[in-house]
Image (tube, rainbow, N blue to C red; front, side, top):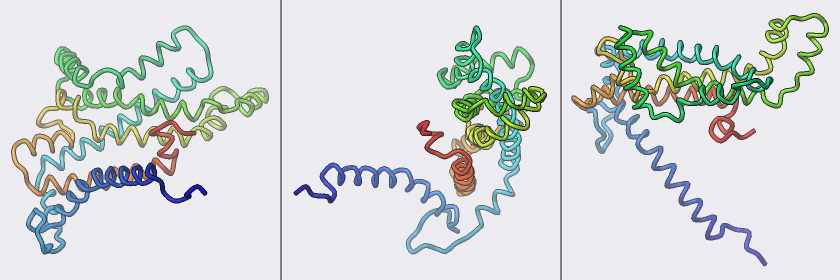
Length: 269
């Protein structure tokens, strides 16, 4: 009779996944514990919960300034990416035209080109344009690199969607804009919103290209943390990292509610 319990493969898989989760979660747990420690490091016995290092963030103006810049850049980049991705996804999914594949490749190219190469290229470009270290330069760079994420989720929402309701509305006299706004947009809104959330997360966490474009007065939070850690290691950095971890988890939960994490990560329908 065949054993229905865990076989050697099942046990091995369980051990692998357990170790993998420990490897991923342990560093995050350490960061969160240290951020609440009064001494700034983990000691046994634990010295109690303290918000000292979270209050210290308010006394670090460079971090607060970088935080607000990251938020505004993320909001702007995600919005620009959605405005580009929605019409592009409709055109790619619904129509056959010359250059369709080229358009798709162009919009997805930021995923294939090393960000270091893009960073150097945009550094030279913005220097020639006189935009170095400007808010607009950061916004354009971040919008460029998050368009593929918004496009992927928007395309996933449109592909396979029946056009019957749209065609019926058009036959009754509705314009293209009315049919889009009243019928198509509500149907694809979860995908569009999911793409917006994912784009915001990617923009907020971006470092590689921003290092080349940012200046001391116009930098994002991840780059500010990178420069701070390169000069000193203090618990304030740990507290900011803990806030970013929790914030990312909240955004990922929202993304899962909108479109599902499986669909984002592995394209599962």
